[in-house]
Image (spheres, rainbow, N blue to C red):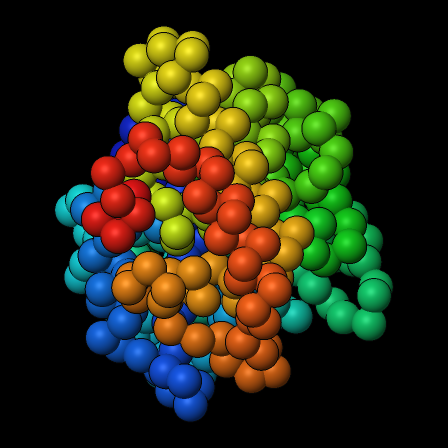
Amino acid sequence: MATPDASRKNAKRAMSFVTTITPFNEDGGFDEVGIHKHMARMAEAGLGVYVGTGGSGEGYSLSQHETKRLLEIAVEEVGGHAPVRAMGVEPRSATQMIDFLKLARDAGIEVSQLYSLDIGHGHAPTPAELDTYYHTVLRAITDLPLVISTHQSVGYKIPASQIEGYVRDFPNLVGINCSHQDVGYLMQIIDGCGKMVDVYCGGPVQGLQTLAYGGNGFLASEGNLSPHLAVRVIDKFLEGDQAGFLDAYNRLARLSQGLYGNGGIRVTKAILNNLGLPGGYPRLPKLIADEGEIARAMAVVNAVNAGEYESWGKGQ
């Protein structure tokens, strides 16, 4: 595992990550075989992974044992090929976050996300309560590089000035994942912290702005379906190939709209299954996507592919 100081020194390279699905059997069982195969696809593409997520990974449905196995499989399959990071789910307390980070560290995870606090019932923590939460977690976990998440799912923004203070005070903070619709807030985060740590946006739709503002890339659940396309966006950006970058970005952004305005991860899993790839099934209370959702999404998949890639079934 990389030390926190080394991780910060190695930062500042543009990258893309996928927030991975967790394949389940049709009866809802934990599908270890499917997980191994899916992680191997990500590794083959060289796409960094965040695993155990509350959204794409259906993390709230996982037992502690399942979470541990998921992290271990990700390390086994992806480690050495691409960055392996843990994401987890929104915690209700510092203790819950600390327990998850210890689990990730013991599983051999390189870096873990430090999620926004969700105190429940639609309430938002005060700035003082946020300080208490972050100071408690960051003082407890000093031997694992961490990435702060500020995410719209909890219903509030962590003030940009507070995030900058945490980055300055705690050397094991190596990045920020900013997942809000407000691009002005994203710019504040990059301007305040981007010279110290990596800054990524959640989802590819703001990827263009993130890179233009001086950030490092994006997290894209669309990479579950097309890992090579997610990698290609960044490769073309680093090569300075403007036309290639815009083409790949356009495809990925359109794929995002086709999937996540139309059933989300349920549809992604169904399409993977239809293509003979390891997708598995959603776990209750989520239901299998209906035929209309799948047909609409498949039309977008075919449109953005446009015959350029060899085969979606060969890792594309």
